[in-house]
Length: 260
Ligand SMILES: NC(=O)c1ccc[n+]([C@@H]2O[C@H](COP(=O)([O-])OP(=O)(O)OC[C@H]3O[C@@H](n4cnc5c(N)ncnc54)[C@H](O)[C@@H]3O)[C@@H](O)[C@H]2O)c1
Image 1: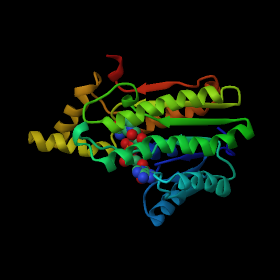
Image 2: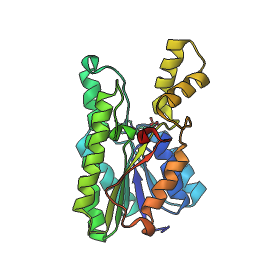
Image 3: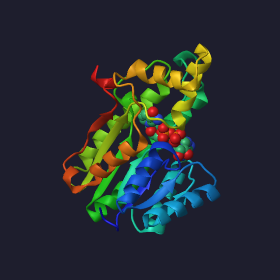
Image 4: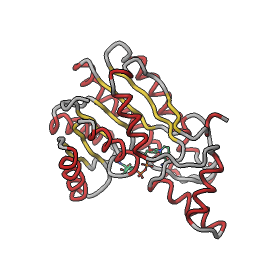
């Protein structure tokens, strides 16, 4: 799209965030990369994406459990790259345990990273978008923002919260050139789901491939994992002028998981 537009993608050091960052970079967006990796690894990633796509990049390792660090991340994006036109709130973690045994620290971390960071990042970034009269916010929720699964109390609470927050932010900015949408993926093959596949493999004494098929098929009528690049393509569309009236949505990409 436009070479002058800048996208901040949280949690873009791996998985879905990296897939979205790469697809936006391929369409000419400058990219603020972010993730909990070493400064050296982050710098190397930023340099390789800048060279591959001929765009400007920067990198931050801000810990999203800290609201001041989130405001600093948005400010760094503006300072290093000139603006924040697109905000993709993607960073997230997972932990599975029954509610009565769920560790308090895991609850607090999931709510902070998967939900509160979305609020603080929008609070910091949307004023810049309103000032310029154009902005796109894409919140990576989950099917677990729409339906529940056992063992995922904190994750489901956070992701349902992200969907609600998306709707409020969309309404508040509806006539200011800023759209706010959520993407709700089903299974996407990334580091985040590996422990869940390994747990099935261990419990049933089966191989990784068989465990993956069992995990995906248990929830999705289409027993195929979504690839990160597919979510990148949807993000590019949401940033386009053709999507300028799409706002406040929660879009499942889930092999018919939530169609049931
Ligand atoms: N993989 C799936 O099947 C799936 C499905 C639906 C939704 N999602 C959501 O997609 C998003 C990305 O997940 P993924 O699967 O790519 O996982 P991932 O583990 O590959 O990536 C997570 C990213 O978040 C960052 N992060 C983690 N904790 C952080 C913290 N405290 N501060 C800053 N950054 C932190 C990591 O550094 C990494 O860049 C998450 O919000 C996740 O809930 C994933």
